[in-house]
Length: 74
Image 1 (cartoon, rainbow, N blue to C red):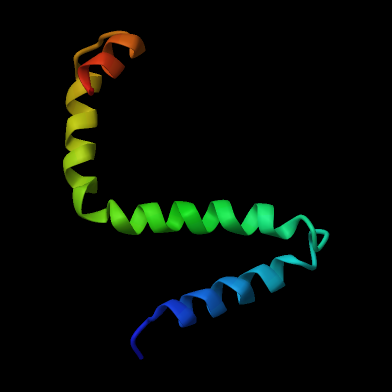
Image 2 (cartoon, rainbow, N blue to C red; image 1 turned 45 degrees about the vertical axis):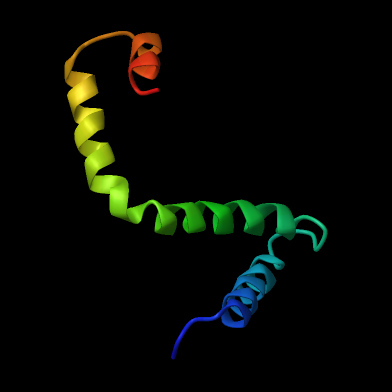
Protein backbone atom coordinates (compact mmCIF):
# COMPACT_ATOMS: atom_id res chain seq x y z
CA UNK A 1 0.00 0.00 0.00
CA UNK A 2 1.56 3.31 -1.03
CA UNK A 3 2.08 5.86 1.72
CA UNK A 4 0.41 9.18 1.11
CA UNK A 5 -0.06 12.31 3.17
CA UNK A 6 -3.46 11.19 4.48
CA UNK A 7 -2.04 7.85 5.64
CA UNK A 8 0.85 9.60 7.41
CA UNK A 9 -1.47 12.04 9.13
CA UNK A 10 -3.76 9.22 10.24
CA UNK A 11 -0.82 7.22 11.55
CA UNK A 12 0.57 10.25 13.40
CA UNK A 13 -2.74 10.90 15.13
CA UNK A 14 -3.10 7.21 16.00
CA UNK A 15 0.27 7.39 17.75
CA UNK A 16 -0.81 10.60 19.48
CA UNK A 17 -3.95 8.86 20.70
CA UNK A 18 -1.82 6.09 22.21
CA UNK A 19 0.24 8.68 24.09
CA UNK A 20 -2.86 10.42 25.39
CA UNK A 21 -3.18 7.85 28.14
CA UNK A 22 0.09 8.99 29.69
CA UNK A 23 -0.27 12.72 29.05
CA UNK A 24 -2.99 15.27 29.44
CA UNK A 25 -4.81 15.83 26.15
CA UNK A 26 -3.40 19.36 25.93
CA UNK A 27 0.17 18.04 26.36
CA UNK A 28 0.51 15.09 24.00
CA UNK A 29 0.94 17.32 20.94
CA UNK A 30 4.12 18.66 22.49
CA UNK A 31 5.43 15.10 22.66
CA UNK A 32 4.22 13.85 19.29
CA UNK A 33 5.41 16.73 17.09
CA UNK A 34 9.12 16.64 18.08
CA UNK A 35 9.34 12.88 17.50
CA UNK A 36 7.64 13.19 14.12
CA UNK A 37 10.05 15.97 13.18
CA UNK A 38 13.07 13.93 14.24
CA UNK A 39 11.85 10.93 12.26
CA UNK A 40 11.27 13.08 9.18
CA UNK A 41 14.77 14.54 9.44
CA UNK A 42 16.19 11.04 9.81
CA UNK A 43 14.44 9.94 6.61
CA UNK A 44 15.51 13.02 4.64
CA UNK A 45 19.15 12.75 5.74
CA UNK A 46 19.41 8.97 5.44
CA UNK A 47 21.39 9.05 2.17
CA UNK A 48 24.12 11.28 3.62
CA UNK A 49 24.45 9.53 6.99
CA UNK A 50 27.38 7.23 6.04
CA UNK A 51 29.42 10.16 4.69
CA UNK A 52 28.64 12.25 7.78
CA UNK A 53 29.75 9.45 10.10
CA UNK A 54 33.03 9.04 8.18
CA UNK A 55 33.68 12.79 8.41
CA UNK A 56 32.79 12.78 12.11
CA UNK A 57 35.35 10.03 12.81
CA UNK A 58 37.98 11.89 10.78
CA UNK A 59 37.45 15.10 12.75
CA UNK A 60 37.42 13.25 16.09
CA UNK A 61 40.81 11.69 15.32
CA UNK A 62 42.31 15.18 14.91
CA UNK A 63 42.12 15.70 18.66
CA UNK A 64 41.14 19.36 18.42
CA UNK A 65 38.78 21.36 20.64
CA UNK A 66 35.03 21.27 20.10
CA UNK A 67 35.07 24.93 19.08
CA UNK A 68 37.69 24.23 16.41
CA UNK A 69 35.68 21.22 15.22
CA UNK A 70 32.60 23.42 14.74
CA UNK A 71 34.61 25.91 12.67
CA UNK A 72 36.03 23.08 10.58
CA UNK A 73 32.58 21.79 9.65
CA UNK A 74 31.13 25.09 8.43
